[in-house]
Image 1 (cartoon, rainbow, N blue to C red):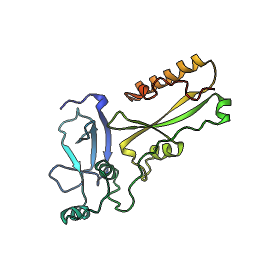
Image 2: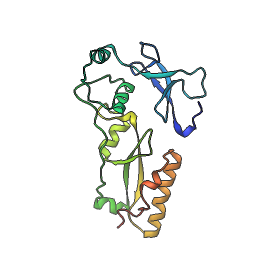
Image 3: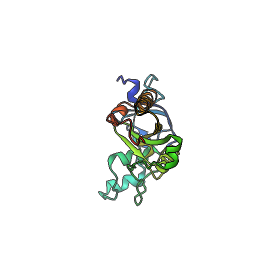
Image 4: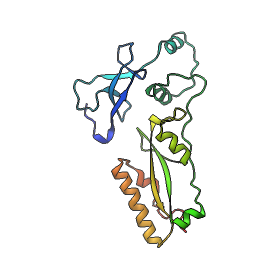
Length: 201
């Protein structure tokens, strides 16, 4: 099946405990890629052959819960995929935290500098953006086990605050458009709803 480059996350690697080949009870170790419809395949890219589809690996201890009909997990399907794809297994008591929206707080020092940094997440398989705090951004960049880092793409942009208002609008719009293009973030420009002078002073 053909997937455009924008619909595939390539050059990933698993050390085991994340996926298994369909029909196998053993964890898969090696290169893999993810498609936009949340399917997993062996190989670095779709161009590699042969390529086999993977499924989420369920450790025997978790399988026994399922076989016994015990409903002990409170994870969503995406969270289960996240846990297994990061080798965290199932921690049945403490699930990773979902991302939290954070409204930027601009300081007087930021206005003196004339700019500040803004931090965002894009959901890997959806055109969904979320502005987050610097603290949370660092957790996603460092792939902290307490956040769902494999479900989201962290990135940051520079945001202009002062100067000629029309010029500020143009520069911020250009920064957002360039970020969307260079980091393959379709829909990011529309996220701002033409408010490119936000926080202007």
